[in-house]
Length: 338
Image 1 (cartoon, rainbow, N blue to C red):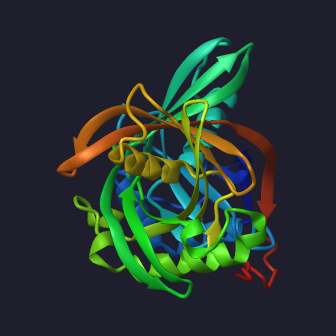
Image 2 (image 1 turned 180 degrees about the vertical axis):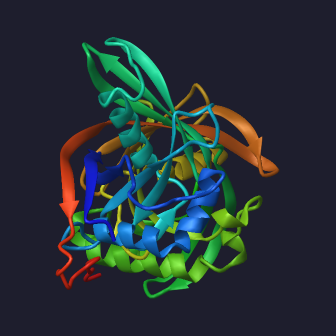
């Protein structure tokens, strides 16, 4: 266990992202996807993840990433995303934060006014954080994701709150979407615990099913999270929805969820509600923060209709830390109470 770890912390629409620019443990592999698989089996990588995610240095809803080399010189950097339960395949809010961080630190040169692409290799593929600048400040970041598509619609599932219809879609990770109103819930902090309980129930009911199988890469299989959404109609020509994404094992995304927004765009595109050059998605979180989701292009992926999604948001620095480990500390790497 390292005795000191330096991080740069950001939040994207309220969701934390802890960046470890120089991970002090080996994270080998020829590609980022391979590095993730090896990290899952690495005691050193898991211990570092737990140290930074668990209490007392983190909390049950902490999120972050280890910066690693890209797959080739076509990208600026690679990243291994992590949370309290392991290493994820995709993270839109983290990609937005990494774009802002790469420009803030000078890793990627950016104009005072204009835009620059920060290209990032993640376990699900190559993505882009398009950083927009004005007056020498970053003012917005577009997350352009891998092609996203629907895997299954209207999957009937019995839950403790009654029968639900679930749509399963892919946005770099696999998500199950459920209309919160269909089970008497609102995407509001007052229903926070019930939303978590249902989100976990749906995830684990489908996680080992045929609907959770990625059609091209088994490393991407499994339901990553449940998106409980409210459809609020349209506003200013945009589809207006609010959601809470319950991912991993009961973590709650404070943002509208970047890769989850991509998965929702795939669903809405299939319904004809969002189109390339047409209507966008105004996507709000349980804390009221917002992403704007748009369809860049209609494509085909995994033998089915797909979209290239773009999610626009903003990330802000919250601090820089040097976390230390006292060799005599009995609570290392830490603990979680949920």
